Image 1 (cartoon, one colour):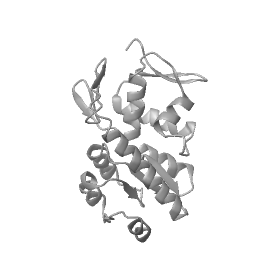
Image 2: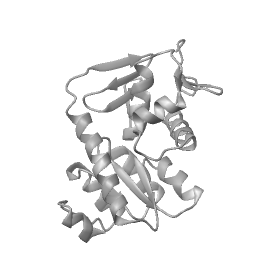
Image 3: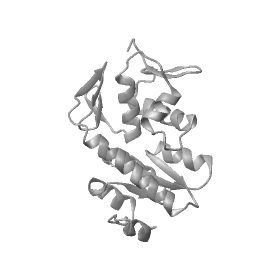
Length: 204
């Protein structure tokens, strides 16, 4: 895997521990995590330290592993065994999305109730306190915040946040929403609309 990434023009740095991984986040364009079984402390540190760096988990072909990866903040995952060509395609895809986000220019700050989203810095705050969100969690919340009270279908959210070229399911979205609600500490902020999708509460 390292050799294939190097041949494709990437500079690869191997992290030997969870602490080493967290210390290298600021310098990385994309992080590929081959051992997703982080300790509770490592998982907390990872969520606190990363915001804009895309994270790809390499997981076993089980529902538990895929759900765990999403809950720990993965932007994408790849089931083992996999073809190196697919890994390279996913690394390029999440890297391009990160670049597009970084070059969109100043967009401003979205505020609703006690929640504030700084779209330039990719930072979220609730009642003035920082809330560490993964890229996809932040993208989902920003998408809903731009259309408060409007119900967005699952297909709309998946297409906007995951991209049409990526494999994504309603289950992936449900896991993200559950994690996002828990992090915000405002369970009524994001409402489920049965049979359709999600919306930001107009009464919040």
